[in-house]
Length: 406
Image (cartoon, rainbow, N blue to C red; front, side, top):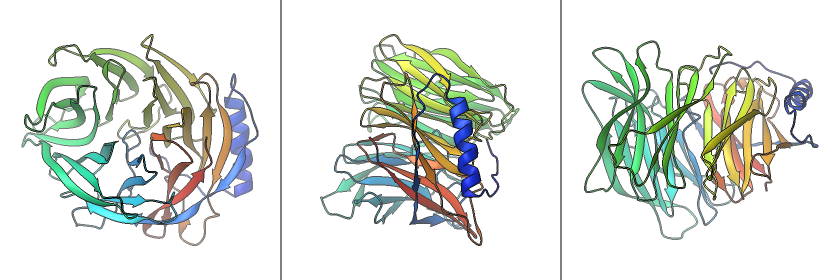
């Protein structure tokens, strides 16, 4: 979805949003909603993709309470645009970390945190997929990093690779999905790499997921570990699918696949990426997506291996959302026009309340919220840090909300 949002007065916006939410929450619990205001951060750049895309992970919370985020700072014509930032104090202060070599203003990234190691994959302007592992050094207040692994995961003169995302299974195999365009035919496809060890390197599995065509690029994929293997939510055009494999299967065995959702709304989403996935400690998988301005929620039951789904809102112009597990609760944060609503479930997705509305300051001269993207860590002990994108004259900036959850 790529829609621009106009400027709304705060009072009119909140009234419209809350009415839409209550109408859309049929079957869920309607509770009092508290408004929270955000604070400005020093995180900024001139890349419109400063925290894109939605299905990817750009923010993580460490066991020591630190939060790390990767943003695209842009700068026209310069490389190394993706940069790590850290905060040791819930966003009161932010410290710059390493830049990712070869990235540019159009590069997008994904990653996961394992202890003190941040594993990251990202695309380059040459159409390659890079992989790097950054280790947090020492115990100082300001995070310092050491690169302990750096690879070109995929590069081919016949393929332009973009939009990578990855997950690691219980056996330590990394599964990395990306969208590739065949230079000769113009066809797009979702492809899969695997890496069982640093010594073995990256192997192209030969698998493709979904239709292979040149109708449009509209494709994204999000691998996620399951209780007994690894799965992947992927979107092609207006459809969302689930694929999975068991750890005991041969690595060359085809993944099981099923259709989860077909959109009838006619939304325009250039990368089919407006969904967000998080897994809890029981390996249940929670996903939110936007469709026709509404928020839809999906839950994968680890015991039954079955999906269920329901609408959480009416039309609130939702397009940018994140799913998080906050101290065991399921939390979905979505833009409501240019503000953000927080939906929370304390019963594993059976019902949701709307405890918070996150309200940005009234736009001043040169300030607007045309693409109010949001970013959260998929796992946090709380409170939940949320970043929201806005435009300040020629700069893309990030607003911080410290949401008191759980």
